[in-house]
Length: 181
Image (cartoon, rainbow, N blue to C red; front, top):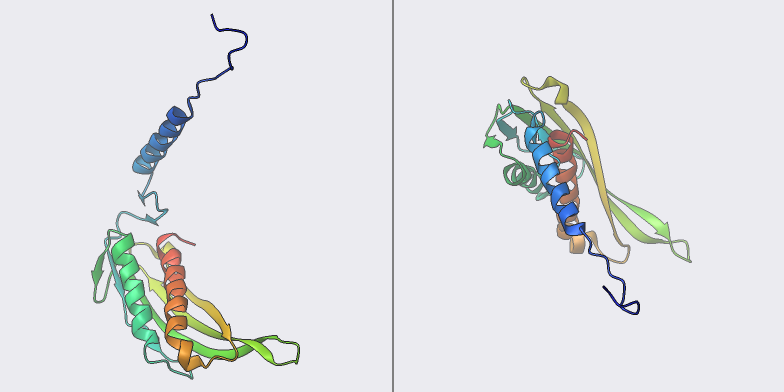
């Protein structure tokens, strides 16, 4: 019998509860309809391939690295995040697109009414067609931007801004295709 002065302790089964929850999630994801993973990707099982065409740059202002950077990031997301095989063209998910806007505009005024920040905005129009899953098709615009100090030249920060913006654009397009967002 424990002493009345002994601290009261309760043995917790939190670890067992957590293990049970994880096991339940794994079982549900394996037995569910379609191809599901813990990453949230929901691609129908009949979709086995993806093609991502070179994203053409049709914006009035053309940054030479933008199209190849975005194209490569999209392709890499599908290769690394799904089990789909990448084809040059004609994939079960066939993705095409174009850059339609690349612009810099002032945002945020400082005390003397001059812009304290500039914003680089990139908009792409992406289209996905799928004969095997026509309900997942889309034709949509995606826009991302990054702000930078107005005292900094675009040429000085353009490469890093394009890297960041294309990361976000590629992820947004991937989410639309693979997560149905």
